[in-house]
Amino acid sequence: MWVGSYTENMGGFSRGISAVRLTEKGLQLLGLGVVASSPSYLIHATVPGVIYAVDEGLGRVEAFHRKSKAANLTVMGGQATSGSLPCHLAATADWLYASNYRTGQVDVFPLDAQGFIGPLHQSLVSTGKGPKPEQDGPHAHSTLAFGDMAITADLGTDRVNVYRWQDAVLGLESSLELPAGTGPRDFAVSPVAGKIFLLGELGGSVFVLGGGRNLQVLKAGEAGAAPGDHAAGLVVDPTGRFLYTALRGSNRIVAIDANTLQPIADLPSGGDTPRGLCIVGNLLLVANQKSGTIAAFQLDPQSGVPIMVGTPLFVDSPTCLLPDFS
Image 1 (cartoon, one colour):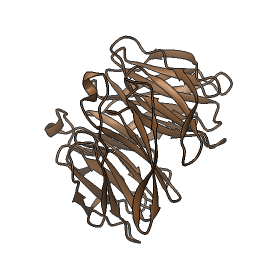
Image 2 (cartoon, rainbow, N blue to C red; image 1 turned 180 degrees about the vertical axis):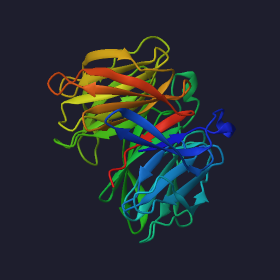
Image 3 (cartoon, one colour; image 1 turned 120 degrees about the vertical axis):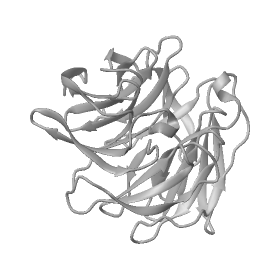
């Protein structure tokens, strides 16, 4: 597993992307996979062995390559984003989408057959703001890309925008307005039913979205956030029955029924400021950014309730967890 992190230029202590192995005895830190500048979000490319990372501090997107089963990565190069604080990536075989949080635009870069990132192709720009202090303007936070569509979540404007490729350009197809102060942050797609879930950072709202190009809210629920909490990370278990998110502030993880969108359990996250989550087998892994810990929780297959197992692993300023099954 690869661990994205904050380095000194973003107030962290890491030196780059770390490699962690899940063993029968628990999590094991293998060491530094590659030196990088605040690689706070990581994804796999469609090209085997290629990983993409944001450089949140310097405003770039970078590509790395893993040879065989090595615990280290080699640098392939990258591109500068048109904005600042890129915080999320999504990729298809042909395109890489980077959400620039501070300046609000989503940048689109071409990808070649080897996974190299080409020069900026297009920037998707939105306007507006929301009622909360964090919503002083557009703040793009994530993108869901599939087929000829790209769906973007803008935390600053309380909107989810749907774009469609036509004549090699993405055009705005529709825009879904969410309740004021939602702060749309993260998408998750059910591996079973194909449902699209959306997490609101500012208050912990959870939505089921549908309607294709004319996107709409089919159902809404809450994660049980405490005053001042900021929700982060949204994952679905392999059965599609349960969702998991984290609440920064009260430092909890929450299990949610994917059908009713109601919380079914919550417990301490095993550290301070839980941010990145992933599921590996029957384990939920949580990156606690400020305490520098990765905690593991066993998931009950019937109830979906997580139970902490083992001792949290110390890793400098973890923000993102990327499973690697190769």
